[in-house]
Amino acid sequence: MKLILVRHAVTAETGKKLSGRLPGIPLSPEGIDAAWAMAASLANMDIAAVYTSPIQRCRETAGILAAPHQEKARTLQGLVEVEYGSWSGRSLKSLYRLRLWKGLMADPTGFRFPQGETLEEVRSRSVRALRRLGRAHGDETVLAVSHGDVIRSLAANALTQSVELIHRLHVSPLGITVLEVSDKHPPRVMVLNAPRL
Image (cartoon, rainbow, N blue to C red; front, side, top):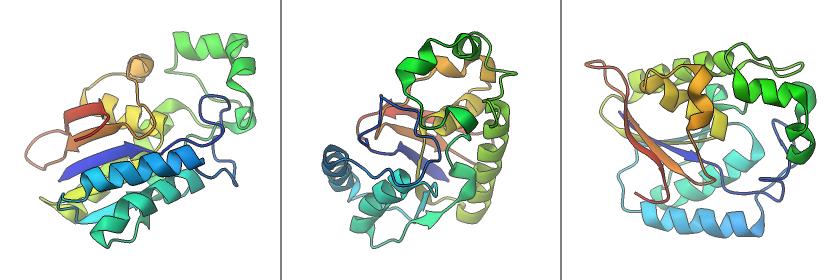
């Protein structure tokens, strides 16, 4: 399977707040326009299925990207955003000042977001979702819309990189990461955070 992972398009909060799993955060007009531009650039690809995180900004992005392929985006829980717990909805500026944030950046391996997940738990569930997709889709090309930390986790896993180094990978809004998944070899990173294919 060729898995095209796309981070959702921007919302009014992107880069300002840690939105997490909070409901009611749609794509911004700029995000909608950018998603339609990406949909046009992917329109000629033979995409067998489209999957999405259940979070609104991903569902909206996936719906736009699926439209040229006459596909309906299917929700896959393993692609859901990190549970940031009590940090959800806080401004990034306020989080950057916390000693805990500095701890997260210095040693993310054992860090648990307050009342939330660890990045190792995120990696485990997203890798399980990846394996499930690989079994279901064989040699097909599949598109999946998710979140920055989830996509970083999948790329880090394919690169056999520990969670400790996850923040060295950058994933932009609408950035494209492509993984090759096969039962003949471990997952391979073919593309990382490209603006277009």
